[in-house]
Length: 267
Ligand SMILES: NC(=O)c1ccc[n+]([C@@H]2O[C@H](COP(=O)([O-])OP(=O)(O)OC[C@H]3O[C@@H](n4cnc5c(N)ncnc54)[C@H](OP(=O)(O)O)[C@@H]3O)[C@@H](O)[C@H]2O)c1
Image 1 (cartoon, rainbow, N blue to C red):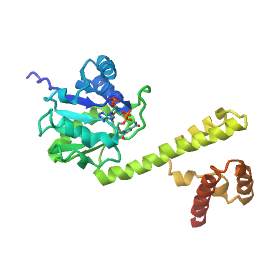
Image 2: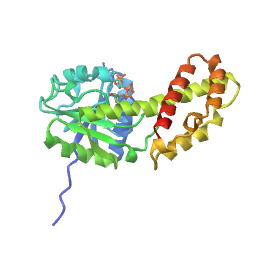
Image 3: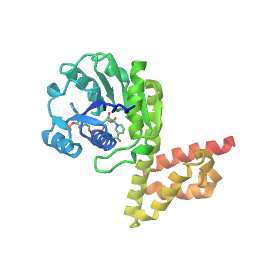
Image 4: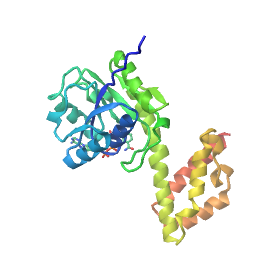
């Protein structure tokens, strides 16, 4: 018997920023039907639409009403507001999800009964193509019956798909901020010091890579090294004297050193 061709779900992406752009491109590249993209700026929407062969709009009132899934990739603070505007243009029983790690799915609930989250746990930049197949996609839907559908789409773009409720996703987001934003802040702080001392950041790049690679196959606690992990008080003292010149960073060094020393004492 001839196999029936599966009809591709129609997806609308609201937001043409870092996530909206990269997600639209990935969905399109994996053969999914992104029928329309939205940005408040016509040029931005047009540019993305051209890249993925879709329609575009810069008016929420003109969003196509017949899609199977609407993905809101807009600033966290605007998700509820955008959902409210969208509710005037599309059916009340449309499925609407957002892409935020920290925003509860329920911000969409006043406007749509079928709502949820499609949160890709990675850092995105509009200019850098992400390695989608390895990105954890954290899913939630208000109705169980929608989860299978959203999961199917997520599995087309990544091998790592997780079901997380709002509370679990918020926890994951806090830890994501710690390992990504905080470590990057430390990279930037280290760079500032090196620049002021006329040394290149290049000195640290292999170390940064090694640190991140080590925890891919081991527990971070087991991989802790450095003066605090060794209980090397003399080195810590020398570092603190050096950091007198950098009074903003000294308390950061002190706090983290104290935490690592405490962990050492527990062993
Ligand atoms: N960036 C990341 O690394 C990352 C990772 C995972 C999840 N997320 C989540 O993904 C979502 C989007 O983040 P992003 O980094 O893609 O942000 P972004 O690059 O700043 O893009 C945000 C988009 O929101 C639109 N927008 C802002 N205010 C709006 C409003 N009042 N009405 C309609 N549209 C509005 C912008 O529209 P215009 O095009 O009209 O300016 C832009 O397209 C957020 O919920 C964020 O938490 C981000």
